[in-house]
Every structure is written in C-alpha cells, then in structure tokens.
Image (cartoon, rainbow, N blue to C red):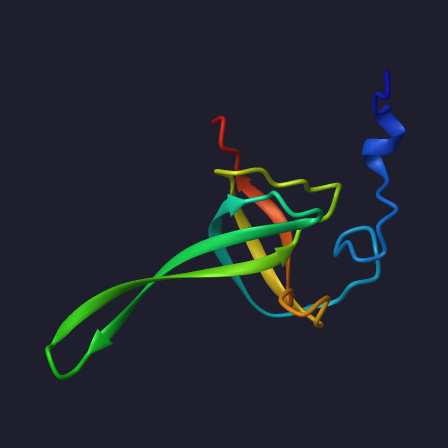
Length: 107
C-alpha cells in the first residue's frame, strides 16, 4: 500500500506551491466554492458577486468560474470553501492559485 508518511505531509516538493515552493502571489484574495477538481492539479472555483445597474436601480447577482492551481499539499475537493490569490500565468487558463482551505465540505 502506498501511504503517506508524516514527513511527506509536512514538506511539499512542488515548485509552484505558494507555501513551500517559490511561487509569488499578488493582487487581492478571493473566496469561492470548489465546483470541479477533475483535472490534475487544477480546481474550478465559483464565486458570486453583485453588480448595480443604474438604469433599473437594481442589483444583479452574477457568478464567475475561475481555474486555479491546486497544490498537492492543499488538495481542495468539491464543496470546499477556499481562498485564492493571483499569481503569474501558470498555463493558458490558470493565473490563480489556491492558498488555503477555509472550510472543508464534510464540516
């Protein structure tokens, strides 16, 4: 059986990890819910925001889906509420990275 030892959990060898690697983050942090984690090392985060329409004097609720890098040491799953931060472009669609899990899905 391939089990993780205690030492493997403490140290991450991923160079793109914002905590253990050398990836710098910038910009402001956002919170959202993980809606997909099927792709390897990628999580799709959905966040809701409101915009005000002056013409109708109403607020409009919108959602956006952001592809973010999901390091192995964080490993966010579907339903988790996570914090993401901007970084350099990591691929064609990824320019955000998951920095921490705020609330697990099972809680």
